[in-house]
Image 1 (spheres, rainbow, N blue to C red):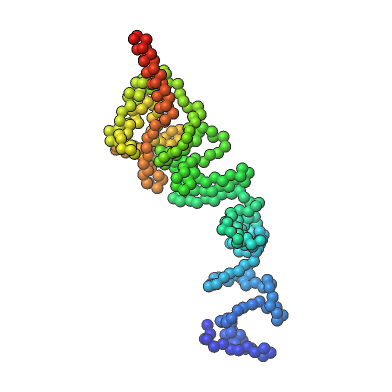
Image 2: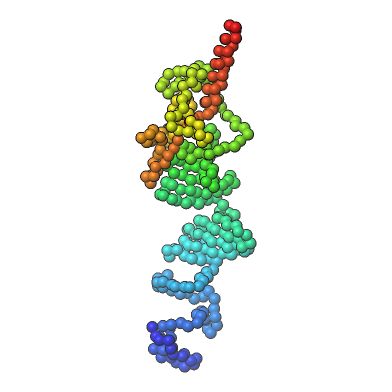
Length: 318
């Protein structure tokens, strides 16, 4: 590169080749395209499709035109049908990602609000996927234009679910799955649910003929309740001994596990008999056995009727 002093090029005077070469080793001031002595706009290029500049270094702004689907503002991989298109329409900044001359995704930011839109009035159906820990663990936001619905859900080795604010855990609910989906699971369940009413839809059972116990015998409802024992070590959240769920009738006991392809898969057990499962990363997750309360309620109704019959028989002898 030449030094800090450059030859002066005077209008009307022929310059030596060495002067021109030295002058263009270094450019001082702004460089604007000219044509026939006047500035011109959007006429000349820097480089060609076959003769490219290698790298460009800037400390300020790079300004590009709006572009179009067939001629993006920023072209990717030398293919004019792939790139990034920018535009400002009615005060809204739009950045579109072009694939095969079609907008594959678009981000819009309105100047007058804090609104961020993904998609546009014609391209409102789509998904945002965020992956973590491999392709099997992901979260996504899905907008369905046809149903005007928004679905937020994730997936891991335990299945698909909806998680909002760290407190709400729901399954992905497709159409036509009434009575087949659950709220929470053996690992992620609620701390407290406040409500006024609960409505059963077809699960209160007639148990007057008795129920099957864990050892395989049939017991009356009252006998089955008498078989329920306290857990030797565990306590409830309010400090009292916890019931041993394994002493409940089979119809009520829910071992920790999950459903996959229509089959129930029970979780593994540690040396203390406590359930757990292992993520694909190798991390161990604790889970918990449960009791299905609708069957317990049915069992209690049967036991009450059984006791009522005993009381009635005693009164008839009095």
